[in-house]
Length: 190
Image 1: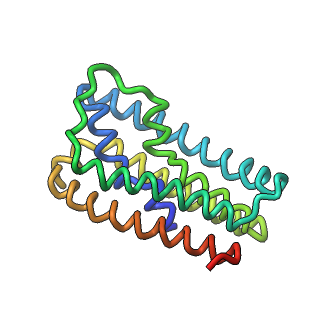
Image 2: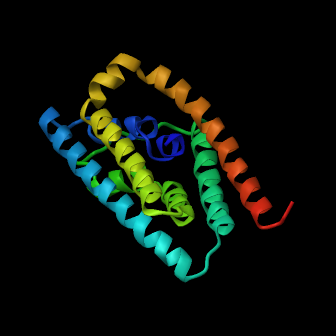
């Protein structure tokens, strides 16, 4: 569950969702949050089920999927760390694009890779159900975070969120490297 919280959870979506919906009426923000959460949840369910089946059919090993997820996670985490040195993103000049908020803001490629690998490792229906329930719990938390994004941003404040984001970004680089190391060991390299 912690892995899903880090890779798919609300901490990373608050600022982009807030920026994207800054000019929208509160009712429209809530509608957007519901749409994003429902599409994201459906996408992850489909990705977990189909992805793990495809992985087995194509004979992709768990270590290879772990390595894939680790590399993508590493690249995204490095981008987050390096973005701190760039110019801030300009405010949106139009309505946010629904699918951009779904993918990659909520549904991340490395989150999908982790879900597929864990589903492929799942030895029975009960474990698969538990994994999918964990993902759906994170999506429910995301929905609440998006629905109350303005209150959260006012309460937490952009500075505190930026500090936490910087710490989390560095930790994500370390976690991504850990995933790569575990995958390489699983392949017999190292």
